[in-house]
Length: 330
Length: 51
Image (cartoon, rainbow over all chains, first blue to last red; front, top):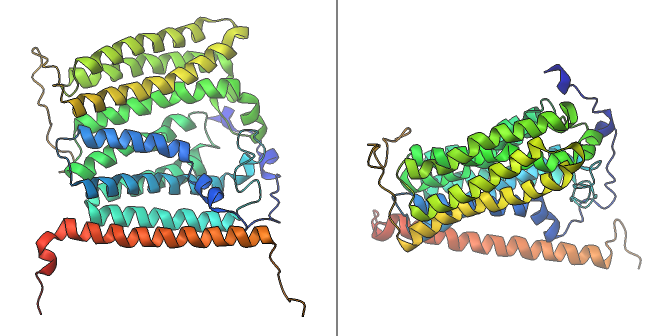
């Protein structure tokens, strides 16, 4: 995509003052793990674990979640190591440990690599090597495919890169069952199609930041109108996908009510953003960004509550889909 | 006598100490975790070995 060729000299010329590097405290190393992203990863993985037909021993379940969380954190540390140059020119990321000069880039790289290997090996030993392989692939996908390649190369960066954030439910499901079936793939697809409207809503109001850093986010290269159109299109795919667990027979009435009602609000906000006048973009985009977090959380929470309380899934009489399709990686 | 080489400030010493404590706690937690995983995975089989 030729339009994606943005001069990144601004970012490349940024220098990082490492006078204090090597003096980072424990808090700085925890910040390298991107705790907020990690909390979403942990939550979606926990839900997938409970939604799976096999509940492993509590020690194994906690270990699996711990490994998935550490793996996600390690990918975050590798991302911060590689992106330190552009992090320094964006106001949102300027205070991160490497651009702030608190952690040396080589320390962050070693930290990320060691935690990556550790999380994959321990997950493999504690559960199975399918789950470990998937976790390893997730880390590779985020750190290499997204961070090193797509992020600076194409405005579709977060669409494909979003897959990395969508993998944890599949990893957790594989850790519990040793296989991957249609249910975790649907959980994956929900996060995958949720990511573009979520991030682009934020990028619409932060496009100046991304332009300064030379990151070809969609609003920077294609403009706000095209971004609003694509947000709406992705929302049209996301909302039916959000209802898919009911149709496929692994979610109940509570999930149906949550996914339909919040889906309608999601579509209404995305539609308002798409149809709205240029000067009204900011507030609606902010609202959509905030609501998208509530939407994803509520969908997964409804699934979790149904499992914990023991609410049965809705039997879709007209469809004869098996509850658990044969494993793809059995 | 004056110290030679790099002299750490009190703040730097404090940060190094907290890093060391964190590494120690993490290692202790790992020992406990590996012990529990071994017991759960192997169960009574942990005793089943050639003597």
